[in-house]
Amino acid sequence: MGQTITPDLAEGLGRDRPGGVIVGKIYPGGPADRAGLKTGDIILSVDGRPVQDVESFRFRVATRELGGTATLSVSRDGRTLSLKLPLEPAKETPPRDETRLEGEHPLAGAVVANLSPALAEELDLPGAWQGVIIIDIVRGSPAHRLRFQPGDILLTVNRAEVHDVRGLASQLARPERRWRITFLRKGQVHRFEFSL
Image (tube, rainbow, N blue to C red; front, side):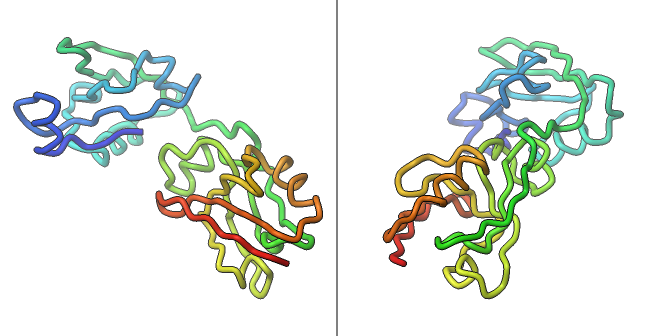
C-alpha cells in the first residue's frame, strides 16, 4: 500500500520534485516483503518506466505477466536500490469463510467474510488485509434496518476484537441485552450501541 508523492509531500520529504509512490504498509510475507521493500521506500520506476503516482504503479505491475518479476527502482535513505518484485496473484489467506449471520443480534442478516489480500484487491480496499468485512446485507434484516453496509469492516463486538468470521460468530452467539459494535467505514471508525 502506498501514497502518491504530491508537491507538498515531496517538500516534506526533502525531494526536489513530486512523483513516485511512498510505501506506507507491507503485507507480511507477501511479494513486496519478500522483494525487500520497506515502509518509507519511494518507488521511482517499474522495469525502467517512471512511476508518477499510485495508479501508474498499479498499471505497470498489473500489465506484467504473472509468474515473472518486475524490477523496481527504489529510493531509500538517499540511495537508489534495484529490487525484484515477484508477480503473483494475491493470496486468499485466510479463506473467505463467507457466512450469513443469523440469530438475535444487530448483525443478523449480514453476509460477512474474512479479509485477505485477494478479497481486499477484489473489493478495491488496498491495505485492508485482515479482519472481517460485510459483503452483503439481506434486505429487511436487523443489519439492514440498523444501516450496516457492504464494505463495513467489523473491529469489535462488545469490546472484544473481531479477527475472523468464526470468532465473530462465537461472540454473536452469546446472549446479550446491549450490543456495542465498532466498525470501519470508508476510513472512518464508527461505534454503534444497541439494546435488544
